[in-house]
Length: 188
Image 1 (tube, rainbow, N blue to C red):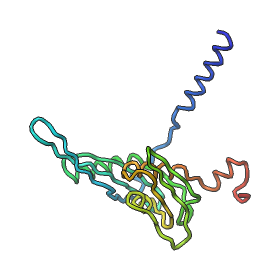
Image 2: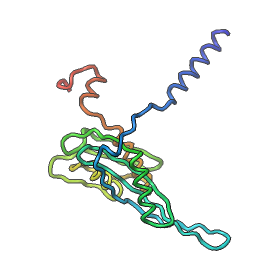
Image 3: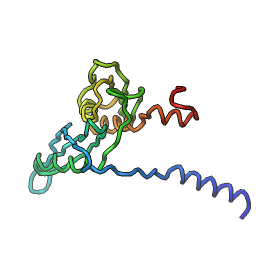
């Protein structure tokens, strides 16, 4: 093998390593006192040879405000209660721990998914949750009491929730940022 082929191979391996997803330890839903909140229920009609099939899709958020844990899930069934139950089960498998300060978030962050963007900004004590619809459900479920949010682009609740989760994943606490910069947390 000449060195040009070797260089191409190492470039390919580097590209593959970059694509490899990081393994994240799943959070056990039984360890938390999760409260569920239905964000959206959608009636779906499928036209078949014998007529129309009616079913329901539910988008659900679960969270434990005391542990700063939140998750979302979608369930589909012929009846609304079964769709909600399936959504809750799906949300419990998709939990995320969020880095928070006392009652707000540590810094401003922008989450993106599809054509939707969600901006989250920390707010002083007493501001409350300034958010609409799907974002408000997530903020109250995770236990954030003071935050300013803006949903930009799409109004589709699925994409708004995924953009909000992208923003929450990007939140870092002071110790992590200090460690990345090679400084002590007090120096920041």
